[in-house]
Length: 260
Image 1 (cartoon, helix red, strand yellow):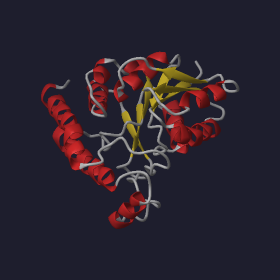
Image 2: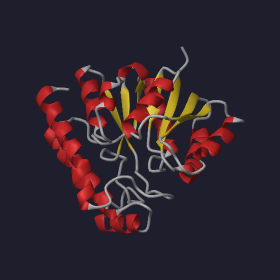
Image 3: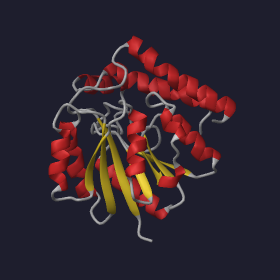
Image 4: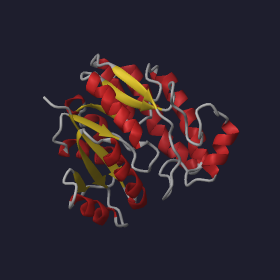
């Protein structure tokens, strides 16, 4: 059976970033049987019109207009359910996850059909936001680069610290436990991990389920790029961080204790 994959892009007001990302995906996925599903959470921009204009030429690019309450994890799940391919990949639509890395992950998956591939900022070949060159892993340079972008310095620093904390709590062999950039067989994923989550903590449960099923995880390093348009939806203040970070910590603890 030929390899086929659906790329799921959960969105809310990401029109300008989609105009960069989707053409890049089209170019990089040449020769692959793929579809792109934009799972939208009620955008007020022209995301729908843009995607529908693409659909006139590229029938494999579709817009999924969610009518449920806004939810990042459930947007992803709805995209998974919509997919009619054997494999699914989901990623951020803000341009932080490069299209060429998607192609590399697809190629790895195609050679390791039973494995799951995770895009990772914390393995060889990976780096965190703000670092323009892999050999320039300077925190000061990273902060300066993020400061000039549409991301927040606080979000960049805290995402790294949180990932390390969560790995310690969960005792995970996966380096990027908050990745949100993953490719695997559609039937490897189940609804429970998504519907019980508030935000990105769903990913901890996804990883836990994969590991408990003795499925191999391959981490592919990538350089997480800064946002070009729009504003970050991660923590922009310390109070917001505490509110959003608590479910991550609680989930990591529960997974470690109960294996859920």
